[in-house]
Length: 165
Image 1 (cartoon, rainbow, N blue to C red):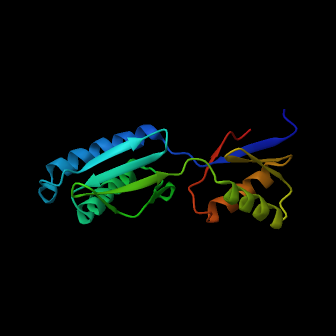
Image 2: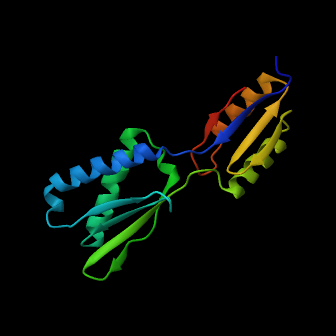
């Protein structure tokens, strides 16, 4: 039996579900009457971790983003990890906006989590490893208390607990 138990706190977004949500939202936009002649498009840029939404004006662009967010919510994606930029009027009578995808815990949020765990005086070791936080302890009860605390706290991103050993 292991002498130390641990778990990882991560913030992940399933890109396959994002892609499916985009395709379903595009189908809905093509069938809706209020999007007739809107020339709306939704494009996933996976390497830059963002989604680009385009339409003929800012109203329809915002409506397309709303349709996309509704589809993502129905798929169970954490909407906290998606931040919409402002709508920019582009040339050619179109408007566009970018939706940034936050995958991984930002370093400032990770530092805040570690400081919060230490301030609560749990008997655990918390360390930042790239875009995740690893929490380890000799006691499973302490780890469960930390899990409960992290689930109840608000850090601005959706958190998942993985690799409980």
